[in-house]
Image 1 (spheres, rainbow over the protein chains, first blue to last red):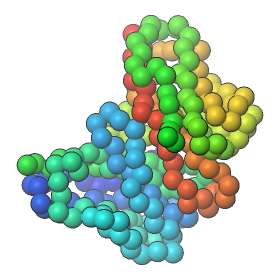
Image 2: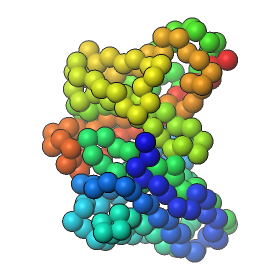
Image 3: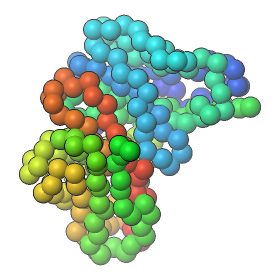
Image 4: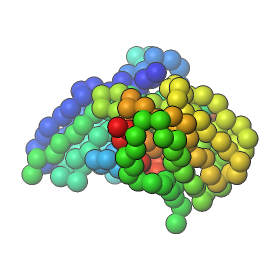
Length: 108
Length: 117
């Protein structure tokens, strides 16, 4: 089952713009993680936010978590061509449950 | 270098011919799992293992088997592959020291692209 649902499914932006994608989930979480996947490659961990945290930053990444709405967002600021990838959120329980992802294309 | 390795990376086979995809990690992680990735469906967990000789079904276990005889290895076995098992497969591992509340991130292998004709 997909416990993390990303929105939008696809996003195309100009280099330098910000990219925002959202994730909704259905059950309580201990933490939520965001991963990036370059085309056909393995997933790479980006950032983890615990259920008692509301916002977290890592470089150009900003993640928010609203447990009352069961949603999270990932913001990539000042996007670069190298940010072109698919982004997945995953609810962390005894296993990681992924959604279908958001495909981000950054145009030069 | 800490890593998860999978072999083969690419495989084309025919229906019914048994195959094994190997997975190995060098990080002494307790927890290992297999996922398949299909367009529009994201990653779905096939099987997972919390330690040696401890395995359990994930969300889509039908048609697959696993074993965990050693901590570092977690092979995925398709006894009689069918075309609907054509997919991109990922092995992953992480520590299990703190159980369900773990904040440990998962490390993924590079993927195995399987085509069953």
